[in-house]
Length: 117
Image (cartoon, rainbow, N blue to C red):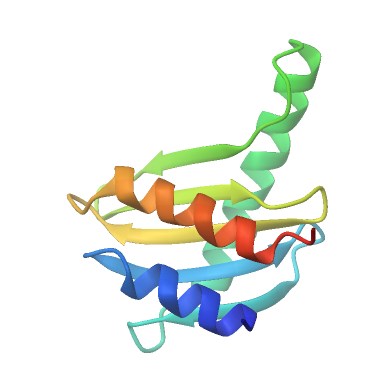
């Protein structure tokens, strides 16, 4: 399955899904999908990706193990960031009040489809 189809399935599989992007840790977008025309998921993922880097550093310093997922709750939406590999992460935006638990589960499922065996 292509990255585009995995992201489309993710976004459309959660009521309130808005957009998702597969990003390299270098800040470059690999693929994105949005149900909202003109939604800038790439810029959002770049900015929150910087925060994930800091969270990963803190987890390492505190010997907490690898970071798997970060949830950001904002006024209008929730953002689930799922680490796919050491090189890539997935950012998924859902409307505030949507099923964030399902969004996390579906992000994990999508990451497993992207991750090489």
